[in-house]
Image 1 (tube, rainbow, N blue to C red):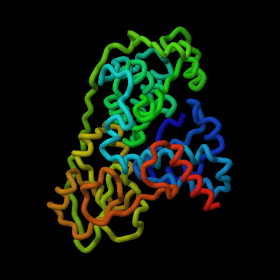
Image 2: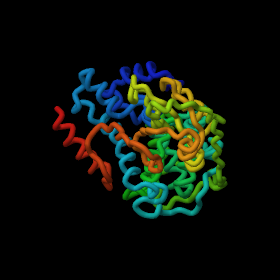
Image 3: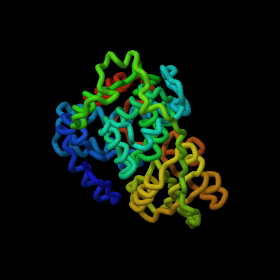
Image 4: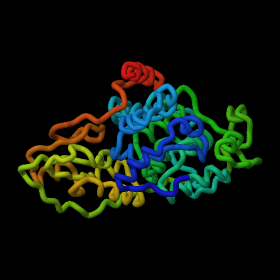
Length: 367
């Protein structure tokens, strides 16, 4: 597993060029699979899914040969499209009530990485130390929390997002709902045999070492019974001393847009806006914030303003404001620019399959 995540733009671009999309499709579900480790940069808007796709196509890979790789990139665009269309609704059970809920907390053993399932405990400790967790392990954790400890997905999803350097609220919240059964037609479950297979462990005799039929009438394990309500606090830097040139346009960056190539070469005020209200609602850890501040260094002449959008306008009165579209930017005023997407599929699709069919049509016309 890659031990760190570089923050310099040239290193990020180099990582794109190292992708093997064929091996990715073959091994991505395994803990040591050939995954890309690009999610922190896609989530922060440093790079785009289209940029990644363009890179692999330019290296000669046939889209038919790497369809699984393209499909997984498309999931990120899909979740964002759901957020755009549904807005605040993604913070509640989207399609129907999560079945079998009896608490809205998080098991103490999850927080302390003491579930006794070694792959899950190792994954949680890696989350704390590196800010990253393999996607398959994320599903295992969510299944244990929602479908075995019977916790509602929202608080646990906030816990994971808080620690993830690739935290994308749409992808995170809606994936938790998919596992929990509130954004899908059934709950996702995994037993010890499945975990052993994909995490290369050899555990037996755990509370998950049961056949899948046993989950039909599953009794909450004592390991998961002690519950906590975790606290989430984001300590933003005390930075809002900036200078604007009134003759230049003001480009507004934020936690979801740290693209260093945006309007590259244009003379402009480049302001990274960190709004306390956003981080109060979607808090991130100190580790995640520090990683974000490192990514900001890639933006030429970037200045950081900690405060609300309205505070920036009142204090500095920029004449011409430009920003990129995002569900969290609805209160911005100025010129909104579209984000870059892989395909032309837009709007809400109740299932990824419907969205993907539109993507395939688009992809076919480009060949």
